[in-house]
Image (cartoon, rainbow, N blue to C red; front, side, top):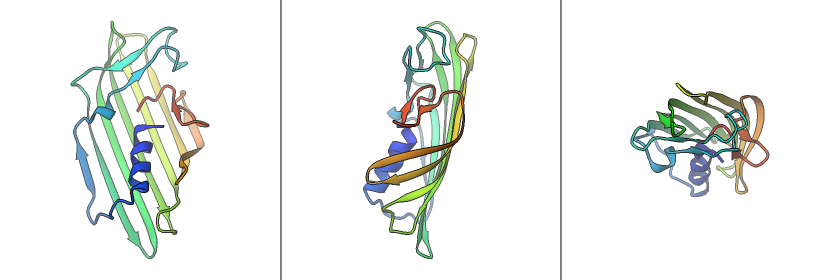
Length: 167
């Protein structure tokens, strides 16, 4: 499950209070660090792992919740940038995720659309440009994706397991 999906599910299941103003989070929490182990991403050279470099990851997330005319809406935009390595070469990465989900049943089931991208570029052989657009449903059983389009190999959509999109 992506970092954003896990955070949204936690927010929904805990019944977080509705915020009148956007909640803005800045800084690199531990969840922003990543590893793409060898064999996880079919778009990396065989045997190659890539991981973020400690201390280089920055980002921010903006979350807005509102209820209007009986419709609860949750919107989030997250951007994360940093440096990564394969142990020999240096890369920069960019991750962006945005989604809007709504509910008319008090937040028990939220539905909407998510757009997610992860890119990695640098002086070595690991170059990734992954992303997807999906309908999403969030309920008591979890975070469910129905992919509309994808490029690269971002996730295993049946399980939500990361492949080439580690955040």
